[in-house]
Image (cartoon, rainbow, N blue to C red; front, side, top):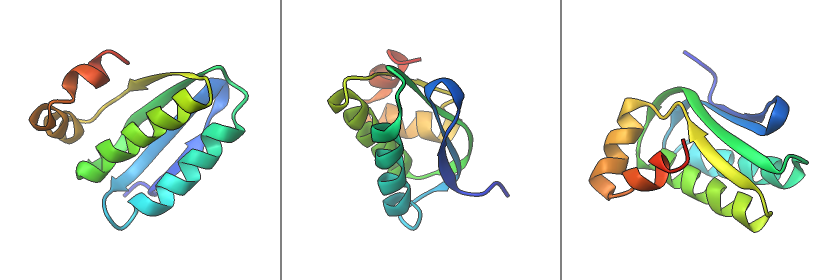
Length: 102
């Protein structure tokens, strides 16, 4: 099992990993928001390739991080969206939003 975390990598990559659900979401939200504000990069990549499992909380986190990045004047893209997150996005009508950022 991969540790559930959000961390800032080189070149403005924000890596999400582990299980994204109601238990982990609030902490990840606060940590991610702080990392986005602290980043000097003008563009951020939200990398979800290490997410093991996600509820709708994972998509809510991505949307919140996208808002944070926009508020900080940063361009944002999403990569490595796992199948379960993509399926939730389809049901929620958000697929186009994430596809535009890949």
